[in-house]
Amino acid sequence: MHIVSAEQMRALEATAVAAGATWPGLMERAGLGVAQEALQLLRTTDAKSALVLVGPGNNGGDGLVAARHLHDAQIAVTLYIWRRSDAHADANWQHCRTRGIAEVNAADDDDHKLLRQLLGAGGLVIDALLGTGVSRPVGDDLATIIAAVQDMRPSVLVLAIDLPSGVHADSGTVMGAAIRADLTVVTGLAKRGLFFYPARAYAGTLALAAIGIPDHKLEALMSETLSAEYSRSLLPARPEDAHKGTFGKALVVAGS
Image 1 (cartoon, rainbow, N blue to C red):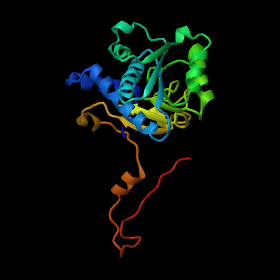
Image 2 (cartoon, helix red, strand yellow; image 1 turned 90 degrees about the vertical axis):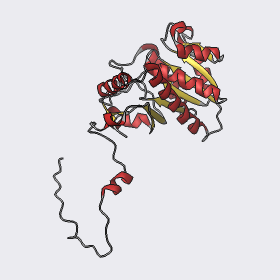
Image 3 (tube, rainbow, N blue to C red; image 1 turned 120 degrees about the vertical axis):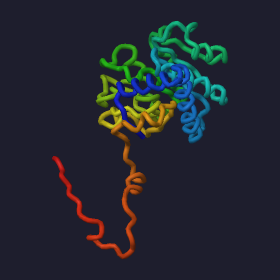
Image 4 (cartoon, rainbow, N blue to C red; image 1 turned 30 degrees about the horizontal axis):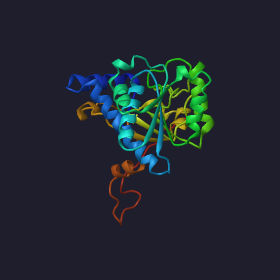
């Protein structure tokens, strides 16, 4: 899994579009990948419902695409819309409305009573509130929404799209408050903040929703995750008659 900064991810997306992809197409692939991971997560439980918390940006758009695919897979989906406007110009929102997917607008839920009722029903919660653009501390109504989700854990499973809302994409800082996810489905490539604490403790398991970044553009990236399996593949074969001098020497220069 390659690791990028938020700026690198935006540049790679722009490169993909310049090469012939479209912004709606990238969002469609991201949302479909999220839905596929959500279905796998739901199969581990008896839950047949999903509450999608939809924010105002591209992260919210990914959530709307995922909601549509989950509905088409016979999952009972409800949208909880936070600060997303102009539904008539939002094709992904319209696709959800055409399917009759239930929705609640946070602006009509001042005391968040409806949100708590929806969370109390259990099932899967998909966090599509904030993405890589968070730059200031979370507060006010969003902090209340996040707290309501946290209060229901572990009664609900939480899947975050790209990053848990409230986590800084580059530093891994928690910006005042953040969602704690059981699974974070990174879209495109993993953002480096996910590998720093405290964000690492908020992200849960990581999965990838590929969006079609050209392979040759990934060759220039200098950071990627290192797994035990991949590490073993880099080591030379060890014949049975090998001894400690067979493979040369190693020098370790270590800091504090």
